[in-house]
Length: 225
Image (cartoon, rainbow, N blue to C red; front, side):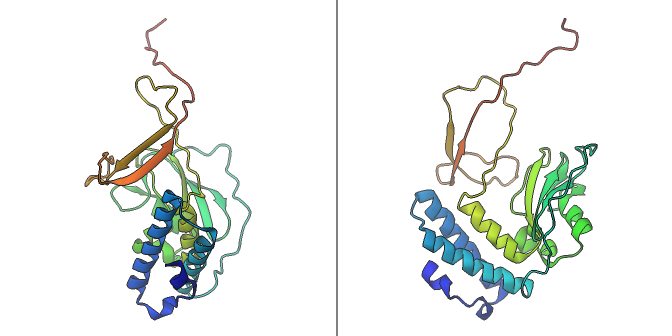
């Protein structure tokens, strides 16, 4: 696949079919990364080819000027989304609790915030490309979200995600005692019809996470002295 994509002409394909080829390429990158068979040369060829596809969808070189990382006001409330970093064609946003990234299942939409901040950029209105968002967080949770303002940046970041070049850390409050020696969690999980949890399943997609216990905590009753 890498050999074919090295000189692939995306302009010869209909837009929808081109996106399917791109998804197949990203899936191959993920599988080769997971199995330890990905070579640096193949990764670079696919990354370069997908970058050309993104540039074609953008209609030419990105015109977004790079800016310095946005400063976060010290008095900013955690219930409001804000830009943590803006490098011109990609941004890091803070998602507060009760905000949905997109899909219109909740009143507060991060996609609407992006349009309010950056106007009607083509990728922000493209559902097939997740409105520029590279990943999601559940509505009740909060944290950082990576988003692209151009198709070229979107595919570049997708390659980095599937090849594990973008680490993600989660802080989770667990009930019960967690084994101190447990440092990895591996399971095969499938996507549930209701996106609340991904149950473990032998035919599901392999998942891997490293774990580190930060600190134990204990609930204290209000009337406890």
